[in-house]
Amino acid sequence: MQCQNYGITRNLERENLNLNPLQRGGVLPAVSRQALYDYGDGYSVCDYCAGRLDEISKPNIMGFLDDLAKFINVDLVRTVHGAREGKFAIMHALCKPGDYIVVDGNAHYTTHLAAERIGLNIIEVPNSDYPEYRIRSEKYREVLENAIDDKKDIKLALLTHVDGNYGNLTPETEIGKICQDAGVPIVLNCAYSMGRLPIDAKSFNMDFVVGSGHKSMAASGPIGVLGMKEEWGEQLLIRSSRHTNKEIEMLGCTSRGAPVATLMASLPYVMERVEKWEEHLQLAQKFAAEMEKIAGVKQLGIKPTLHDLVRFETPAFHKIAQNHPRRGFFLYEELKKRKIVGIKRGQTEWFKCSIYGMTPEQVDYIVQAFHEIAQSK
Ligand SMILES: *Cc1c(COP(=O)(O)O)cnc(C)c1O
Image (cartoon, rainbow, N blue to C red; front, side, top):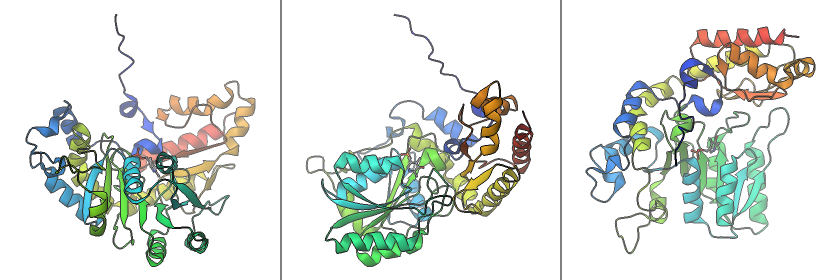
């Protein structure tokens, strides 16, 4: 049998400006590309392991985890394989099948799947609907209190810090307090925030935070961050009775090579860019405002946006598609001609995008391209 090369070459990120929000925060700095190369072999971080991944000192995973814990202000931190695995581990440790959890209405599908995998019932806090789709703390309180009055034993609450549909930033500190006062532990899902904007789990009143290395922390991934308050360590990081130094929810060891090596190599870079979040945000707000100058382009979600992921409804482009020989593909193709990618092919009614990490000149170029394309017939 002869194998082909499966098309395993990629130059998209090198040759284009990529607007796909999923990919903006996961681009590696040069130092992490080197780490990716050095740690590409399987089990590469295990050269000097004495049985606990989180305690390896060469490379210094232990020191890295200490710094990471300080960076997001938690007592205990572990790496997992992604934000979803972090949420699953928390739900699995705190809940049993049939239990109830409260979740915001903009939660990621992986929150739903993690709950489903365990057999949990989800009580949802609705968003404010079109056009803002906002999650309000009063609504969160109302749904939580009603569920408790209903004699439901709520084992856990989850809040999506920034959702992947509208890029809405939620009032985490208020909602954390509401849950704390109700005696319900709460997880903040920071997949789109940790590594972009400052996370302070304690001042946010959070019991747990999860993050995504490949989404927002400039890591190759798959890798996630799971942080918690001291008091949850005993329950979540319980050890095996048979393999007494191995943590059960972590299945012993989690990230065992390049994913953790790139996350480690990127941490100083990530800490620095988080300090500059205000600048990143201003550029995103300017981008959204310039896009809205096109008649028939409107930003959805909270305005001005509080995150770089922005969603637009774009009747302007949809109208052009109706009569264009390339129909719905014209937008993708016109952008591609200008070396701009990351908007889904064939989609013209709406799209979401992010200019995170781009220079103001690159953003100007993109804005101009959209303005030009809006003039097409
Ligand atoms: C991308 C995303 C996830 C999934 O992150 P993984 O690290 O790939 O598991 C979870 N939640 C939100 C809000 C996301 O945007």
